[in-house]
Amino acid sequence: MTTAVRHSDSEVSFGFWLYLMSDAILFGLIFATFVVMSTNLAGGPGGTDLFSMTNLSMQTALLLTSSLTVALAHHAAMEERIGPALVWLALTFALGAGFLVLEVRELSGFVASGAGPNRSGYLSAFFTLLSTHGLHVSAGLIWIGTMMMQLLLKGPNSRVLSRLSRLTLFWHFLDIVWIGIFSVVYLPELF
Image (cartoon, rainbow, N blue to C red; front, top):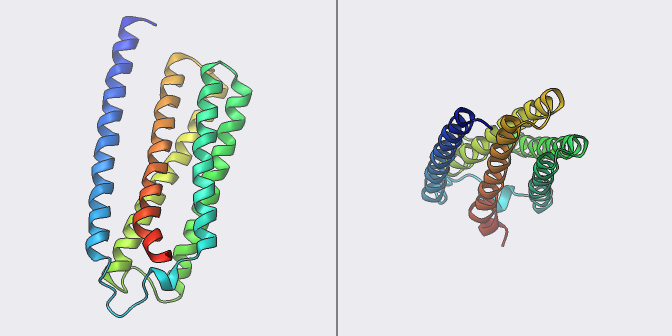
């Protein structure tokens, strides 16, 4: 790898870490807003009235399993095993898409039952937090599709592997945020 390419990659990596830190701040602010608004039910339903342990368990299993599959994709690509890397990425995509389907189904069910984001401060903060996470997962799915095409067309060159490393970090970050959502939003309401 030439010095210019290494320098360029280190600048991109630095920029990515800045992005990831700013995203952590964004989620931290949304979490703080949720905690402040968590008692503002305005006579509407709370989490105990709305949440389904079955749906939550499926969402969590899908997203946490996708963290393993993206790591396996990264590992295979680093060893220049394109076929397995593509299979693991495709599986990660499917798991992430399944997570999104369950989340959209849950949120649309809440809206249909009259528990939309305009019902109370609690639900507004809840929808903001989950929708922001869902948008990030959607962006991650687009990124996974892009990485699959790059691996297929360009092979595991240094730039593609560098991008895949950042995708892997981003996806793990989304799982960490989900664990926060699970712990702060769902867990206190279910037990």
